[in-house]
Image (cartoon, rainbow, N blue to C red):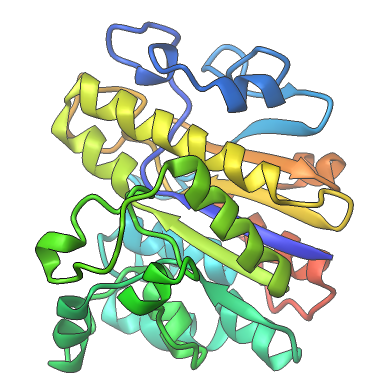
Length: 308
């Protein structure tokens, strides 16, 4: 079995009011289709379709304050309650004291130790490599976890060869970053390119961080576009994926974009969804700490999850 983890930064389940929740303004044809025309909301967080199930996930982790990306994503990738370990929610980067735990216990590391293939499919421009080579450790949890497992980050060359995925799917800004050979594509085609990489690996991750930025902007048009691009990408992934042997797991670290009345994160349930096999296991993913054990079980690798 293969698993594609589609990480969505800052996507919670909110109210049905389209004046402040872009989920109820966006088209989202693919996601609605998977859920038989429904979308989750605070009064009805769980929806099941013929091929998928959507559900709310606790991102608060029993810790006061607003959930943050650093500890939230660390919890997703390790199965540990990172916010409780650290004593509070923290972000956007992993707290220094938690980096050894994340380096040792993250899913990329576990998958590789089990002799399986793992890949972060995001492409990174040349300025990013210059940034990391300067010695900084202020990396997103997905990037930090991938590097900790000894996995090389994908480059503009990989992207130009359709062997990686741009953060915005459509590659709008790559020429201005000095990569003239990176040509634009549709979000649907980006999804097809991603699906080809999913077929080659046991564990594949894409980090879609634009929803969190759109939520902080409180710009409805921007938020709707970010969601519709994701939906178009998901359609491309579905087109190229054999759901008989592949699980698609969408998960977010905290709420944000679902309530544009505030610039901050929310304590709403994070969005989770499962497509393909193992949909019945969705009921076991109640918290961010339940994601890593679920992935480990799907891939038949050991889990060091301690719970809570």
